[in-house]
Length: 256
Image (tube, rainbow, N blue to C red):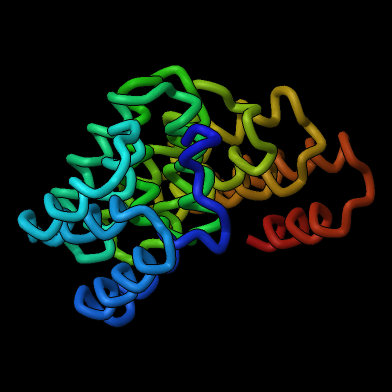
């Protein structure tokens, strides 16, 4: 978010979010009221209460706080709602935050959610919203994939594969690990055509990439084409002679 609203590592927003997740609403509200008594804006207590549907208490605290940018408020509402398990409210408030503030402010908030708060689920909500507003920014699907990697369910893994594909389509060079991460994600579900396509594209510009060549050869081997797998590793050995991994792979395929 903007410099005036960006939270810091010891910020009370992160503190309340942590208490909310670990101890529940009552404990978080008690700490929020203590923070207000210590001089923190009552808006945090208002946001906490609103995220839990306690609108009367939220209105009372908000009436005592100075007005601020709505995007910042909706960002906090989304974070608190996610901690409470209200995923619909978290996504709705993320969309409101992304629509009410400059893209740079949303990106700043997302970076904080991932790097400092450690809130991958909340970050995923905000990234989905941001990607709708900035569909050409390859960071959005890439960071979404990073956030989703921390979530355990199968639907998150499927969404992560789709996000990696979008990031790769927008800018395959945005991060050096992207092609391999994409390849491994589709190898996990045995989508060999996608693995082969990505690997061939990478090897066109990086013919000495032994790891990508190995992934391609593995896909070819899984498709019962040991000869093609051997040829792939011989090609990378010619580009990067003497690599022990390439030589070992060639020996394995010769034995097939």
